[in-house]
Image (tube, rainbow, N blue to C red):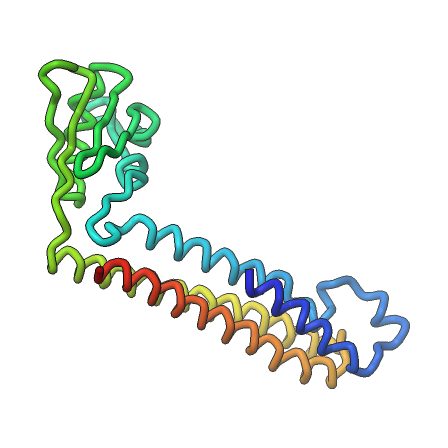
Length: 220
């Protein structure tokens, strides 16, 4: 991931920084102003989560079966417990139709109810020749559905950008604590701050790249 490269570059640029005293050189990584491992990890997780969210959308009218598999189903009417649809039925995409092979016949009704009451706008149809099979026609994408998908993608990107800002805030607090506790040289802290901003800027630009790629598919 690009954030990992940023961390290596940051440590390389810190090589010309004044060396710490013997006592500070023995400090744990928590007192190292050039340790961006947590920030890098947080940014990488944000990108991964965003890509996962965008993958759930209907890309250019193609339905993602993971959306169905993740749907919660109440097997007992009125019960509080629910299970993933993918745990009680096999989801098989076949062109413009998705087939559900249900393990137990008693689960047909609650699965159908879960799909109908969801926001997926799908209508499962029983197979007269196979009582354990449900067929779900996938409607083609419309201009409205594309616009709705793009709006969802933009909202997901905004949430991702906010998550990176929060990660930056955590790193900034760490540097501030080092400054107040005099656990790092002032010159090191001054050099670490722009390196942190560089990582954050890179992570934010990656969000834009991911969103733009998704929008091209959604608009197609």
